[in-house]
Image 1 (spheres, rainbow, N blue to C red):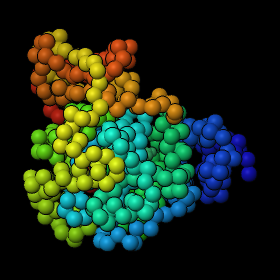
Image 2 (image 1 turned 90 degrees about the vertical axis):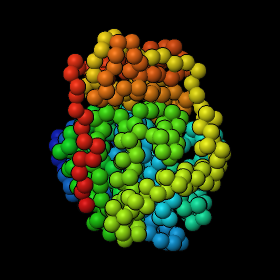
Image 3 (image 1 turned 120 degrees about the horizontal axis):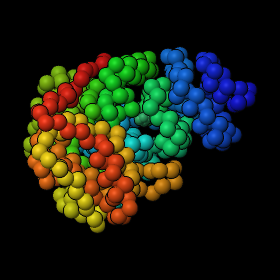
Image 4 (image 1 turned 180 degrees about the horizontal axis):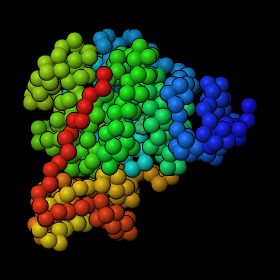
Amino acid sequence: MLMVDIIRKKRDGGSLTKEEIEFFINGYVKGEIPDYQVSALMMAIFFKGMNDEETGNLTLAMLHSGEKLDLSSIKGFKVDKHSTGGVGDKTSLVLTPMVAACNVPVAKMSGRGLGHTGGTIDKLESFKGFSTAISNEQFINNVNTVGISIMGQTKDLAPADKLLYALRDVTATVDNMSLIASSIMSKKLAAGADGIVLDVKSGSGAFMKNDRDAFELAEKMVAIGKHSGVKTMAVISDMDQPLGRAVGNAIEVREAIDTLYGRGPEDLKELCLTLGSYMVSFAKNVTPDEARSMLHEVLENKKALDKLADFIEAQGGDRNDVYNPDNLPKASKTIEFKADRDWYVSSIMSEDIGTASLLLGGGRRSKEDVIDLSVGIYLNKKVGEKCSKGECIATLYGNDDGKLSEGLERLRKAYDFSDTPVETSKLIKGIVD
Ligand code: URA
C-alpha cells in the first residue's frame, strides 16, 4: 500500500477502508510515514469528511495504536470527563475536585492547548513542580489514595492521537467532526474509565460553530462510547462567548480557585454543577438532582477546595499555592481596552479571544513553542453587560510590548457593541445520552 494513494483517494472524495486507515495510523506511529504526508491526509479529511464507518475504524485504529489502561485495582465506578475545547474553559480544574470530594474516584487524562483553545495540562503547570507526566502506577495509586489524578497522554496510550493532536494543532486541521470524535474517544477509551461525560461546546469559540454540528458530534461520540461498552453521555454547552472571565493559563487557575471559594463566575459554577451531577449520578446511582445537592455541599464546606490542594500536592506541586494564588506566575505588564462611548456588549467572538491569548504567548504557534503561563486576558465586560465611556472592557496581561499590541488588535476585533440591551444565549443547550 502507498500513502500517496490513500491521500489521493481521500482528496478525490473516496471512503477509506479499515486496512487503509490502519496502514496510515500504524505507519505514522512507527515513524515510517512522515508528518508532511499525514498533514496532507488530514487536510483532505478536513475538506472531504469521513462517514461513520470510517470514523469508527479510525477511532479503533487509534485506540489500538497503544495500550489500554487497566483501572481494575481502583475501587468503585471510575468517571472521566472531556471537553471538545473552548476558550476560558477551566471546568476540569473546578469540576474534578468537586466530584472527587463526593467520594467518586476521578481518573482523568487531559491534553494541552489545541488551536485557539486552552488545555488543562498547560493550566495545571502554573503550579510550580506539578506534573502530569506520571507513571500508570502513580496515577492509579493517586486515585486510590487522594481520590483524583490527572495524567497527560503517555507515549503508550493512544500514541496515534498524541502525534495527530500536535500535528493538527499547527496545520489548521482541528475542526473536523470525525477527527475530533476519533481523537477524543480513542484516548478516553484507552484511559479505561467506566463512565465518560463529554462537554461538547457549541459557538464562536468552539470547533463546532453551531448547535446542529455540536449535537451531531455528541451523537457520534456517545455512539462510539456505548458501542465499546462504556457508559457515555454528553452535555452541549454554550461557547458563543468565553466561559467565565479569565482566558490564559495561570489567570484561569486563579478563577478556578475563586470558584471553589464560592466567588467565581456563575456560568462556570453552573456548568460544573451540571457536568458533575451526571458524573456523580453515573457513579453513585443517584438522580442528577441528588448528585447536584452533594456537589453544592462540597463547594460550601470547602471540601472541594481542599481536594484540589491534595491533588496538587500529590503530583508535585505546593498545596499552599491553592490557598495563596498570588504565588502563581504573573505577567509584568498590563494594558486595558476601554469603551469609547456608552453601550452594551452585543457579542464576543471567542475564537479571536483565544487567538489574542495565543498571540500574547499563552498558546503555541508551532509544535516546539514553550508557552508563557503568566499571560492572559480578563474580560471585565461580557455579552449583555453595559459599559460606560472610558470604562475597561478587557485587560490584557503580557510580558512583551509587541505581543501586547498584537493581542490588543485581535481583542478589539472580537468585541461587538449595541446601543440597546442584548440577550445572552442559554448556557446548557441540551443533553445526548
Ligand atoms: N479535544 C481533543 O482531545 N481532540 C480534538 O481533536 C479536539 C478536542
